[in-house]
Length: 291
Image (tube, rainbow, N blue to C red; front, side):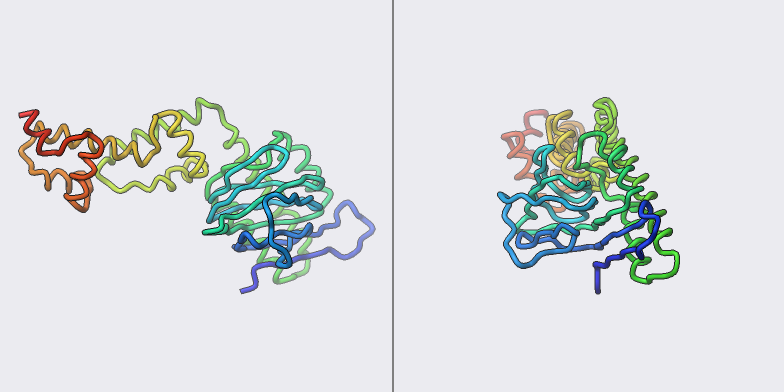
């Protein structure tokens, strides 16, 4: 399936409304790929992280899968699912998708005076270019609508695409404000996540889903969680399970196997090995100590 298309409006006397854009949907970026200035992919060179690429058009990149590293004048950034990157003409950047996974992105490269003013005055006013916004269906849906409309090439396309771009900017602005939220808001999100984990201690928990529901990229969520709690979310969940297991060993007559299954472990052998690794003693030894 073709997943890249472009559009350029006819030459008009009203240059202020002239629009050019290139849109890509679910484009796989690998270490040997780089972008041309207009947003198309170059396959004629091996992209090196040490080389800098100068941006010629306004660009929006939204990563939905994979990982990598990205650097520009604002600093170095780890890229993962839910990362949003905004570039403007004159910016320099360098990046390298992971050699193991690459990354998958949806992107827009455009020249449009009305949108450019909005990007300059609003979206880039925070002096940031990389945001952790999580997997947002509204961003993906808008990108797909722009792509499908460009492929159809129907009459009135320029006006429709212009409206969709403005809609996309509104969504991104909301994400930017959420990404730049206060420390108190982030800590509140982590406290809410901790409460959810405690209430669902025996269940398998999708931490990436929790991050996405709070409009956070998973890596950012994991980092803040560890800063606030002292453990990454997965380790915190295991810590609670071990603590509950110790309590059950001393207060119930359930067998070690029953306790392990009650806490969501599929294997009693794995549970016992993990328990000893975390506490230094076996479940049976704990039960003897507490009896």
